[in-house]
Image 1 (cartoon, rainbow, N blue to C red):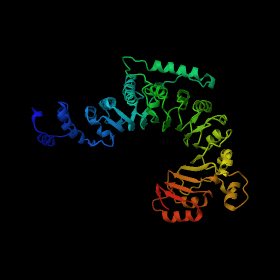
Image 2 (image 1 turned 30 degrees about the vertical axis):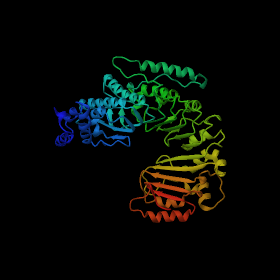
Image 3 (image 1 turned 135 degrees about the vertical axis):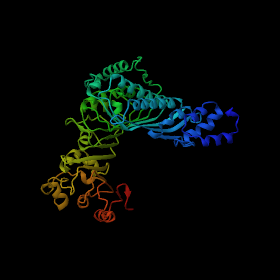
Image 4 (image 1 turned 60 degrees about the vertical axis):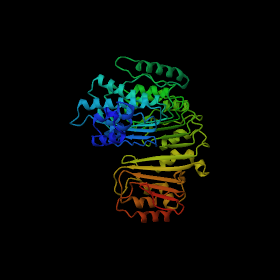
Length: 503
């Protein structure tokens, strides 16, 4: 009977209803005409854009009640980009088991929505507002996590998505709940045997049972080209085995892999590193806060000879002193890494292919800015820097509270290199830092003492400089910029907290 009303009357009726009322959504499921009239009103109540000409859909966690409506929407067939944020905090006093069940239900509904789409290029799953402790949870709850999350990830890969980013989340798992496999480092010549063993173990972990219904990833379905793994959730049980399987399943097309902001036991990387084998890989980012075993890392690099862009985080450290083989990374063009890794990767190889070098100096209360130490690590690059074959960026990150930056140069008055640079004496050490053309300075604490430090410490060949969180809010920024320009007239751009201040 409702379907017999004219469109204008129906729209008037819908305007008087609470658009979030489940009854309105129920009306939209009656027939095709009511679907196209009632469902847009229901979606609009959750700020879901009715005009999806941009093919972009961004859902905040407070909008996720609308997922059943989206799942049924006949007028949403293709999306260029889908971004969805989830929230769950088991540490809240008001937390209830029902909250977790709602969380799982929404993840499963999103998976069904994605499975219905005819096309989807890019997906971002944000767990920034997730704070979940599973230390005291039963194995059944962990399996529920695995079933829900992996069903969603499988749906993304099956959608022929080309870019997947999984970010954020505090997910605490007891060590006894985190599986370790006996994948001791092997020689490169035995890699095929190692990978076969890993594949066999993956198969056993992903065998379908009545308790675990997520399917093994189909490598033939995956069109993934970019994988950004920025959440520890994917490298902890119960999603760990899915992630390692994904590294194998996405090999046909994956060219860019980023693993960052992931905090798991260092020993776990002995499992992860041998499991990654993506022959087409060209861009790799590893931004981790841990030491890394160099032998498995060398084996990893030798398995991926097409890498031309490599970024290693400022807190990543080699476990020992070593040098990579000469034939390692022959296609490398751009390198961003702490000084020890610059030496590790470039000391024994020709550097004619390197065009861009970004050196990451991490300064803390226990790790002062060691000019001599950095120059020693960069000595292998001096020839290329002198001939202007390598463009070097020096990125300094100061992570301590020092009002006058007294610890930046620990013994500068007694340093031969310091006297040579600032007092005009003959240079006693090879100084690679002087060839930096770009300087990026970032601090965790603005300081009154930074201006004087910056003015007396600027490599002579600088072209571009940026300062982030270095100056206090009451600082005279324009005066500071003018003094920088006077000290280094060749500088082209000066940026303070993301704002270009000259030119």
